[in-house]
Amino acid sequence: MVFGFFKDGNELFDEAQELIKQKEYAKACKKLRSAIEKESDDSNLARVMIEFIEVGQSLNDASKYRELSASLDGIDGTFDFGLSTFDVKELKEECDAMAVAIEARNSYANSNTDMVIKGERLIEAAKILQLKVGNDVLAINEYFNTSTLTGTRLSIALMAEGNELIADGTFWNDPKKAAEYQQIAYNFRRQLGESGEYNQRKIREYTMTCTCWICGRQATGEGMHFFRMSADVSPEHVRAEEGELAPSTEPGSPMIFVCKACYTSISRRADAIAKEYHERSMAELESVRRQMMAEVARLDSRITSLSMRIRN
Ligand SMILES: [Zn+2]
Image 1 (spheres, rainbow, N blue to C red):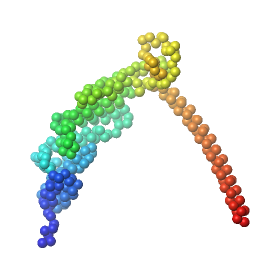
Image 2: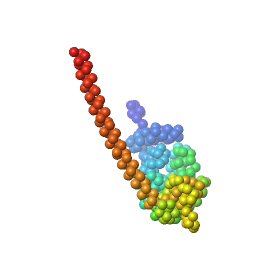
Image 3: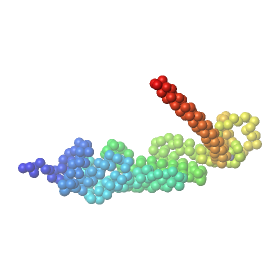
Image 4: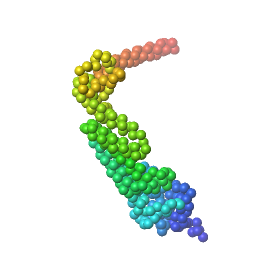
C-alpha cells in the first residue's frame, strides 16, 4: 500500500491545473516539473504551461517568449490555461513578434549609426506586430496584466520610437532629414493620443538656423550644430547690417548663438585652463599636507620623549 503515496505524472499534471486556476503559479510550476519527470502523458503541454507562466512573470524578457514559441511547436490546435483558451498558432505568432520587438527595444545604441540601425529594427518590429497580431489584444499581456494593449497600438508606439531614434542618429549629418523623421514620429504620437510636444520641440531645434556671433558662419540645428551661450550683449552690439541674415542673438535674452566649431574651441580651451588650475592647486595642497604631516611626526616624537621623562 506504500505505493499509494506516490502520485503518477498524470495526477501531478491534474493537480497543477487546479493550482493554475487559483493563480498559484509558483506551486503549479513545481507540480508541472514533477509531472514531466514522472513522464506524464501531457509532458509537452506541461512544458508549454511552465514557459507560459515564465513569460507572464517577465513580460519584457525576449528569451522567455522565444522559449515559449519553441515549446508551442510540440502542441496543436488550442491551448487551455486556467479558464482561458488560446489558439496555438496565434500565440506562437504573438511570441515571435514580441521577441523581435523587445530585442529591438533593448538593443544598445550609442553612436549615430547605431541609433539609425536600432530605429530601423524598431520599425521592422512594428510591421511584424501589425501583420501578426494587428487589432487583436496581446493575449499574454492581457492574461497576466489585464491589459487591453493591441498589436496595432504597440506597433504605432514602436513606429514613433523608431522614427525618433533615426531622427537623433541623422541630426549630425542632415538636420533637415532629421526633422522629417521627427515629423513622422509626431504623426504616430498623435495617433496614440499624445501631444507630440517633444517632437515639435525637436523639429524647431533641428530646423532653426542662426549666424554664429563669433565667426559669422550660418549653422542649422540647435543643440548639435550651434548652441546658446550666456553673454552681455549691449543693444548697439547687435549689428545693424545683419539685415536678411539669420539672427545671432535671441531678442530680449542674454544669449548669443555660437556655432559648434567656435563653441568647442572655447570650451576645450576653458577646460584646459581649468585643468591647469586644478593641477596647480592640487600640487600646493599636497605640499601643505606633507609639511603638516612632518609637523605632526615632530610633535609626536616630542610627546613620546616628554612622557618617558615624566615616567622616569
Ligand atoms: Zn562660429
